[in-house]
Image (tube, rainbow, N blue to C red):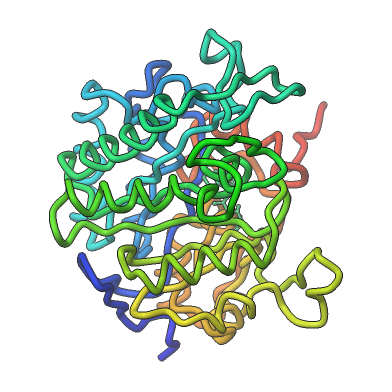
Length: 362
Ligand SMILES: Cc1cc2nc3c(=O)[nH]c(=O)nc-3n(C[C@H](O)[C@H](O)[C@H](O)COP(=O)(O)O)c2cc1C
């Protein structure tokens, strides 16, 4: 049997029945106020039914001003509790670990969605974002913690802190973006302080076996590989998290930084000491062979994004048929709506080049 179907335990929380995680995938299907819709419930619970050992929500914003997308799932108010609870209950009923991704878009929040100018660790000309005061930065930390408590109350097994892709925690981390001179800016320790304060707060306020994961991306938005590996190592050594999710966009690529080339980007993370923290990756894992190859690269689990949009039951299909071959891109709208994508999600996927087949005009 493939190692992908071996169970995986964590320091805290339930084990995964296999090594497949569903990537956090923004799908624009929530109601305008961030309340879960039936469409989003269907799309996610189908993936839990399809055999993913862990099902993660899309990025869910922890403050209204941190909304990054229209129709984004919210976790910033108690009005979201009922929907989140319905979702967590059904994911867990399918024997899938239920994780809510906590997010704040910072300067990447569109002003026309949030109705005001966006916030950032430092004022940013291009987006017109204003700098957070120290008190506001502390409030941000505390709102991530409150959102984790809300996810816990809703019945999730844990949360993932979205520190990747140029959103607010990544904006703090990035020396290019963060020009602060208080305790949240300057040295690497200061720029990464938000992560460690959020994690400590969740550990203090949530139940002991509540799972915490962190997502980082080591490239773009001013991220430096050396700094990312240093923080990744500290996160694992301190052991207050249960999994580290490295978003590489291509798990087989080499680093962009020239002096780091000659070996895979992934290898810079697999060589770190894990101290029981489970390491996984996302990026262009499209077929069972690529999932096998990624796992053989030395990680504990693999994450599927677009491959899981194409097949809600990728894990189950591969488990029952070793020759399972996913459909080729571009996919038809009909295939995708049978896979549980509502018209809103279909429209969004139309903005991802090459994903959806053009319909023939008569
Ligand atoms: C439609 C779409 C929505 C995404 N939304 C999120 C998100 O909400 N949070 C996040 O951390 N990453 C998000 N990502 C990145 C994915 O989680 C994943 O890391 C990336 O797509 C690479 O994996 P893949 O090649 O298997 O799709 C998104 C990607 C896609 C394609």
